[in-house]
Image (cartoon, each protein chain N blue to C red):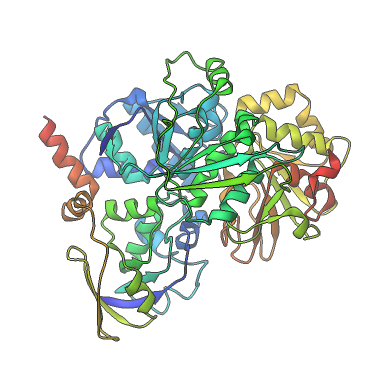
Length: 163
Length: 395
């Protein structure tokens, strides 16, 4: 559950966290610069519990995993978008940042709306508008990664099975 | 499907997160150290203490694992370096923790970028889960005129199909324009496939590919091309014969316009280099235009050969002297300015024209700065005039 922060199409990973901060891998520090070049006020007005709602191609550009790490550390509970760039989507799943693809939910929501979501059922509920939407179902392999608590936990299990 | 990976790659920005992930998971041995390459290129020579520490972390890990690492001074920018070193050859499946890994499609690899945790998982397992992408075909018909480069073709293509026009797809390039193009230009084109959202850019290997690879590598290789009855989700045709040099306007690589529509725009800085355009063909055309001329007063022109070997070759050919005499700044290989890290960061309201690959808001510096993307020829002409200029009058 969280309050909507709405952004447009093709929000790139430089906008999510500028490269000048890539000399650190500390999540808290990366979180402090989330969306800094898009909206310098982004963090000031919000104290966590945010749902980022985006247009098409969210997370395009660089493969930097610092981007989903920054969103997560800044208190973003979930990103709902009309579509995602491929590498960002994988990165988000791998580190356990919920991402949901839903054209209608992204179209209808406005900044300030209250949204509830269930990652596994794919249900998105906009409380302000009293509407419910179904996100594109997550592939089974990605559900498994989320439920393992991230890709590395899944890898640990797979490695244990090998030996 | 789960796919075995032939070569894995990471750099000083993406490797440190992967190393931490492996440590947290208690995985201390990687699957196959000889199928991994680390390259120090983004923040080198170390731009500050934090960058030096992250490079040190990657260095220590590579040493501990017995994996090869190209140190600053020994290598260069990863996507120029790996083909040049003969580390990527046709038929390989290459996965890199860098979005521009798709460059190697130009040497007949299937190559794609991932993030750090995927890279860490692949280090541990030697394999990774992938969805087989659909393919789209881009056909470049006609003959390219002097001054037109691979960069112009790919900017034009992204302008036409959009920045997610190839999302999740493999982009296959063909046609006379590609057949006639040198390997350097082909690498520029595959490099920017990611800018249209593609998983991979690919060009069927031909005699040029084989010559290029044989001159650099003793590794056995396998030539693949699409079968005649291959299915494409979309085919887009371009005529390059009368195509003008292209410029992508701020703040998207998809904002391509013919150079004639933007000539006259004032520019503070020109950058010629990067994994997109820092190879011999790029340096040669820049030198051809700059020879006997000077960078416009008040403009900074930064030129970066992408690898040590290219730097040396440019020295041998007299290109570096041409650049220095023209008052250009010549830098050691680094990704620095492309992503606004160091070696040419833009200040408030400044404008750059750059041969790099992205012109997002704040990409090269302050959020109010702006970046125009173009070919090295257009960049060199712009450096001379101080305003965006058509290179063809200098050729």
